[in-house]
Structures are given as structure tokens and as C-alpha cells.
Image 1: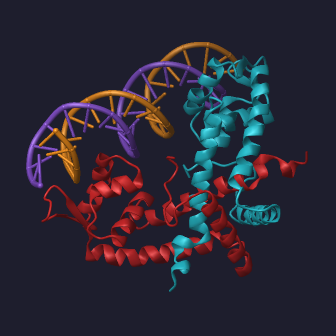
Image 2 (image 1 turned 90 degrees about the vertical axis):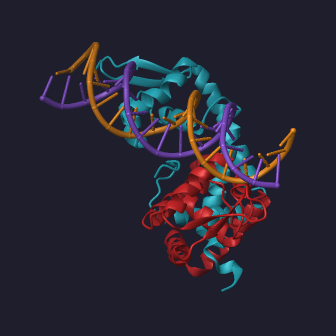
Image 3 (image 1 turned 60 degrees about the vertical axis):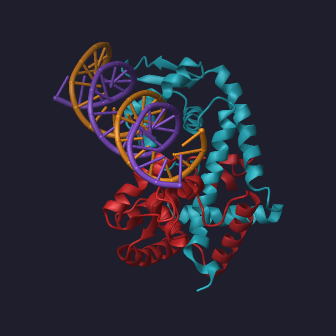
Length: 154
Length: 154
DNA sequence: TATTGTTATACTCTATAACTATA
DNA sequence: TATAGTTATAGAGTATAACAATA
């Protein structure tokens, strides 16, 4: 067996290695904006469905409700997320982004775009398209939900 | 801007998403053998350079020496790694794999190969080769060391 | 009685620092 | 005095369970 056929040089290993690297680089970038990757995900989910409850976030994220409390707290304190008691069911909070968060989302978009360009810097435009296509095939085949990445928890 | 051009659908995001998935699946597989991914990495490093010290492992892994103590302990207790006091410098341990570990390494190889096939199941042979090539370009461009993936710690 | 969210508690992981043995 | 490894301690992160308010 040649060196290049060992599993350590295969696509799955490279995906895990590069994926970890990409996630770390992204964490550094959003860290400059004062956010963790998990917080970015939370802001995205609230932006996509304003008014949703903490319970629904917990379900989608696969974490326990008390965890969401702990994750929303700092976003609330820093004025990015607003908890509004639901008038229909006063047990619920309706979560909304503040105007301050709206401005931040623009910067996050720029950050994510720069990150994409950075990770793909070694590829020309055509290679980048081909890589993206192949990755989409793999993601679909593995049953991954577009736009959602659960981190390394399982 | 079309949906497909948002960073969430770009190669970097897909790499992080699929990478996390691949790492989790790998963790499940090696978990069936009673090992964590970190332990697999440790066994590999000792197999590659028998007799190396805990200190050198700590340096390569970018962790603190006390961490290596904690990681080697269960491998020692389960009879996979042997600590031999160095005769040249009795402060050092020389780490070696036991025969029991040797047999396990064979199973690990099979596990890693099955994992590769699983992750790439959505691709035909040619696509798989192309993906691997593109990933190697990205890995090299990002300065990643072949065969070493540091996990998500940074 | 069931549900949303919070708080209190415990467990896990990891790093820092003090310590032992050796050089 | 410096180095290899261990142990003790503390901090972050996360889950479980008990709790308050509402339905």
C-alpha cells in the first residue's frame, strides 16, 4: 500500500482536519466582533425567525433549555437580543434582534465572506466552484441540513 | 444576491459542517473500540515514533504536560501503552505500544477505511479523487500539517 | 397537571501551579 | 539550578433536577 492510500490521507480525514481549521479561523474572526460562533448561530436563527421562543431554539440546537438561557443572557445584556413576554402565552419569551444587532449582522456577513475567500485562497475560481459542488453532494448524502452545523457535539 | 451565494452555502461553511460531522462519526466508530479520537491520535503518534517521551507528545499536540499524563493513564491501565523508565535519563518515560495495542491498530485501520468510504458514499470514484485533490490543495495552502489534525481547540 | 424559563448543583475537561525525582 | 512527570486546585462549559410563573 502506498502512503497516499492510507486513511490519514483520504478525503474524510482531510475534511475533518480542514473543517476544524476553518471553524477555528471563523471563531477568531467573529471573536474580533465580540461574539462566539455559537452566538453567531443564535443571532442567525433569531434573525431568520423573529419572535421564536427559547424552547424552540433549544429543540433546533439539540441542547437543553437551561443552556439557551445561559447563551441568551449575554446577548440580552449586551443589547443584541430582546426578550419580550408573549402576550398570547405569558410563559414564553419572544426573541427579537435589536437595531444594534441588525448593524452587527451586516458586519457578520462581510466577515463570513472574507472567511470564505480566505479558506479558498489556494483555489482558482473554477476549482472553488467544483469543490463547493462536491461538498454539497457529500452534505446531502450525509443528511446534513443546509445552513446548520451542530458543532462537534454530535 | 441569490440564496446560493450567501456565505452559509459556501465552501468554508460546508467544510466546517461536514468536518464536524465526519469527526463525530469517527468518534462513534472508534468509541465502539473503546477509544476516543484523542487516544487514537496518541496511539498513532507512539506507533510512528516508539520510545518518545510524554514531553515530546505534549509539545507536538500543543497541550500541557499534565494533560498528557491524564491522557496516557487510561491507555496504560488498559494495557495498550507501556511506560518504560529511560535508562539514559531516568526522569523520562519511553512510551511503547504493547502487543495488544498492535492488534488494535489493525482494527483501527479497518475502521478508518470504512469511515472514509462512508463519508464519501455519495461520490463516484472519480469525484472522490477530485475532492481529495482539491482538499489537499486547500490543506497545503492553509499550512496544515499532513496527518495531523489538532481538533477544534485552535 | 403540563409547560416556559430560571436557578442550583454536579460533572467533565482543561490549564496553572506546587511537588517529587532525577540530572 | 533545570527538567520529566505527577498531583492538587481552580476555572470554563455543559447537563440534570428542583423551582417559579403561567396555562
